[in-house]
Image 1 (cartoon, rainbow, N blue to C red):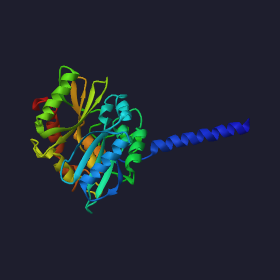
Image 2 (cartoon, rainbow, N blue to C red):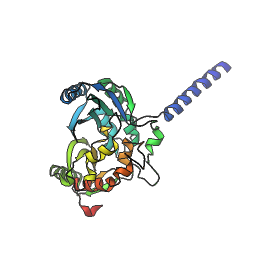
Image 3 (spheres, rainbow, N blue to C red):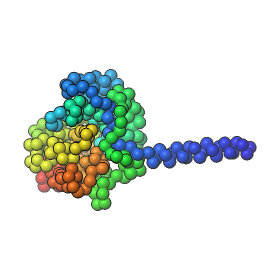
Image 4 (cartoon, helix red, strand yellow):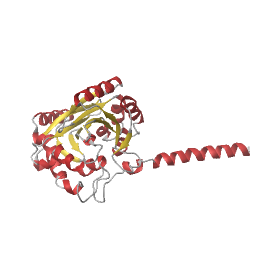
Amino acid sequence: MLKTRLFLTVVLSMLLLGMVQAADERIKPFFLAGVQGDDMATVVAATKQKLTAAGFGIVGEYSPYADVTIIGVTNGDLIQAAGETDFGVFGAAQRVTISKGTDGKMQVAYTNPTYMAYAYRMKGDLADVTAALKQALGMQQPYGSEKGKTEKKLRDYQYKWLMPYFYDRLELASYSSYDAAVKGVEAALAAGKGGVSKVYRVDLPGKEATLFGVAISEKAEDECAGDKYIMERIDFKDIKSSGHLPYDIVVKGKKAYALPAEFRIAISFPDLSMMGKNSFASIMCAPAAIESSLTLGAGGSDSEY
């Protein structure tokens, strides 16, 4: 009996230790799959083939500026998980990127689904999606933060004191119904209002929730909102964090939403300093400019924010 109790105590202690270690595990926003050839079109085509062979649906792609291609992907696991929590729709797609490095080679990378699941307060950890992307594309190293963030930190993420949390969402526009909201956003994006255009769209069946991945061009009313303007100032490291893009517009119910730039940029660049070169100070104009562009891109008006 004593031996049995001792055995059970040891097993329980090991389980608790494992849970603590898992909770304390630090993860990073991106994975580098590998560095491949020097021809963008060839690497993009090969990457897309690997993704579709692994069961991922390619929902859209774009090149926000020279030497970068961004591909939006989803699958059944992502769709299901996105519908299980309030505003989990923000995590309904992952982003795969091909970026030309300073050596002329193509860096194939992708967002870390587990990191995004925590940041968007989704129910699980999207471990199956993470494993599927690693299996399809490979995984050379995680990156995007020197030390990474714990699950606890990401689920209650705030860049700095007084900065917004995930729940501090921007209400961009209101409509009479979900269908009217989706049509309104589609029309505004097709017209390029605010310099914003559609990259991809993912619907959650039966949830009245839709994710739009959107590009913000240099033609935005304020150039400070543009994808290129932002990234040429803060994406300065050797391994590119191109998977920060595109931005998101979410339709849920009768309203269109977005995440504040102070939150959305920070989860992709958690180590970005507040001041100095290549810092948040270098894009100080961005939050208001991005909100303005996304409001117009959702079919709203300047008076709504």
